[in-house]
Length: 374
Image 1: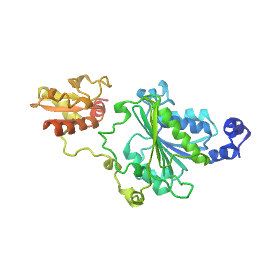
Image 2 (image 1 turned 180 degrees about the horizontal axis):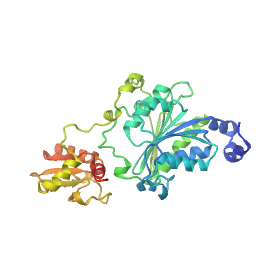
Image 3 (image 1 turned 180 degrees about the vertical axis):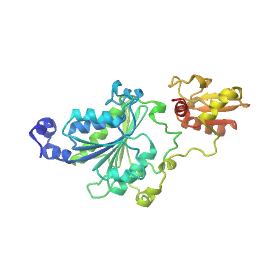
Image 4 (image 1 turned 30 degrees about the vertical axis):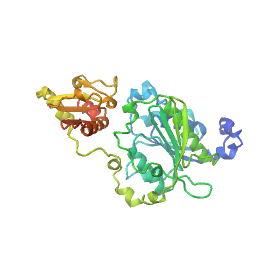
């Protein structure tokens, strides 16, 4: 089943009694789907490719941005502006020509997730948002697929394996068993909003690839029912156990999956906040600038700087301590990168300080930049 060239290539694997020719053949026959070719997806893809996983699917719709290069090690400056999936497959194919790559350059939705996932044996989650995580988890439950989970934030990463068939034949717990309800987006910003240590996704992604290889070769102890937590700033790590919640899992039905709006399910922002669109703010800046106060709740030196919006900067973590700097007789517009942290700041200020004149910039800096793209 393995060619002479493959035997030479994978010799160090084959020398391991736990893998050997039989294990390497299993890797060659396996079909793995990596969702996301970003910080986590890059090392996962590189190690699965090097290991000789025969077919690797990649779900990715984004383009390479210069800010990706600090941690997404598949890409270089020449790739900026190009589709990640094309750059990744080109470089991975050069790394190992024995691997077959399948591109899925799409957003995962209720309409296509089941169809895509159904073609693979093991699913590796490299996403950075809760809506996709819950949707992929539910799809894996419906299709009886194993899901290798990883997440990163600042200096800390998590790894686990969901929906794994234990040695006793029972299915292990799922993502919903560990996180029955999603946190509010304000309390869990992604790495583009709070930053991430560049090597962290490399470490966590390598661990995800390791779990996938153990699953495929059926060797070792898999992180099923175990959440590995690692902090690279202090090099502490520990494992938390959790169990299967059959009632929660039973609630995941095909009918429920098709009709669930996962973005709505994971968006627990307060619905009674005042919002202002970037178009409305732009008009106010032109016609009635003195009627508003602008407050940037991003971290100090967080890019990009927007000269037109420069006025007062108070990071979210310090907003209550400096609430006295906010005026009471103007429309106070708070903003951040996407609108999540500014929404959180408004909730705190309303609850703790009684403010009633606060407005959240809908879509944040990203939406403001889109307004002036052309």
